[in-house]
Length: 259
Image (tube, rainbow, N blue to C red; front, side, top):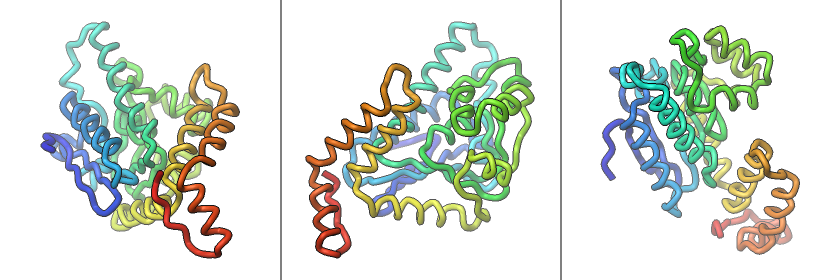
């Protein structure tokens, strides 16, 4: 599979997606969105892939935002289309049945923070900076930043970040719950891999079901309690459930088939 603006690698059970436009601080443009969507399609369709780590090329920037020159002359209709498409692609990440971890190095601004927030977990290096600076350009966040930031850190602090455009450092992001862990730049990928390997030891069908349950809480018109009850029941029909309970009763480590 050929990509223009990302690197896509599979190491064991983990797929790594690296946004690879370091000369533009990995800013998101139309082609990069297309590459991300194609890579996630491969993740969905490849049974051997159990999880994904998304990062940015170089230490300066995870993703510094959108490629502004690409939409500077857009009409309102084109702007809405751009937003709708970006939200759709980031929802593919959020709804992935396989866990997605953002390994955030340097700037995660605008669309970069929005992509990170679509991931299930976020790990940051201590040089990371987070922000939604769009109001300084005369526009709102477009890829669900106004929605997911509130979900993660609450309305008050989210509103402050959104309408001031201020950046926050990694330690503040950790306190707010925007990221799960903070490391040195050297330990960023090893920590992401460690966490992913821990998840991959669990039952893949149960991990996927849990992701659907959590996402149901934030989905309009969906009853999260009913979703949990349904997913819980469905687990009883999986080979993973039989293996997990059998291993527990036999006092051995499970080996989940992912079915």
